[in-house]
Image (cartoon, rainbow, N blue to C red; front, side, top):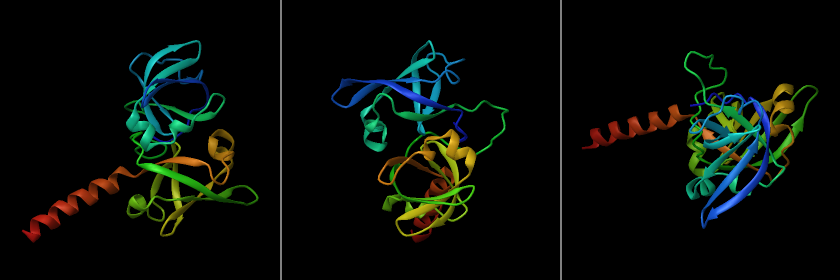
Amino acid sequence: MFTGIVEELGEVVRVTETGDDSALVAVRGPLVTSDARHGDSIAVNGVCLTVVDSADGVFTADVMGETLRRSALGALRPGDRVNLERAAALGSRLGGHLVQGHVDGVGELLDRTPAEKWETVRFRLPTALARYVVEKGSITVDGVSLTVAAVGDDWFAVGLIPTTLALTTLGVKKPGDPVNLEVDVLAKYVERLLGDRLAGDAR
């Protein structure tokens, strides 16, 4: 479990294909590897990955076919910057919202509107996820916990403060760039529970 508060901007060191639909990714992140051990979880652009090895500020993780298909990690190349966050510790402050690190789909940055101190950024929203996104609700974009400022049929917008622009990859993303999206898990649970209840009433 994560909070969507990025701890460090890491760098992809190498991507090694290990099969028809899997890869081994090596990422440099001195902060997140300072206490990383085999089996620990680290979110890379919002995707929960398991540490296979960690040495000299670099950790490696296996990325399976399901992850490559459901996220934008398959497009990573050496030198790319990535948002990194270690798993939340019990008793720590929950600065963002509950983030599982299970990407629901891939969106696309549509446009950026700069203001004096912040920016409004719009993203394309996959149709299957639209029902989970509401104004003032929470969403995770490339591992960053954000509040939805506006929403349309196939898009949503967020406001990015200077800290987010400076300390995450969202500050340099360009129109057309893909992003990993994770909707608020509470919305999915509510839908399932209500669906089961309505189905029971129908019977």
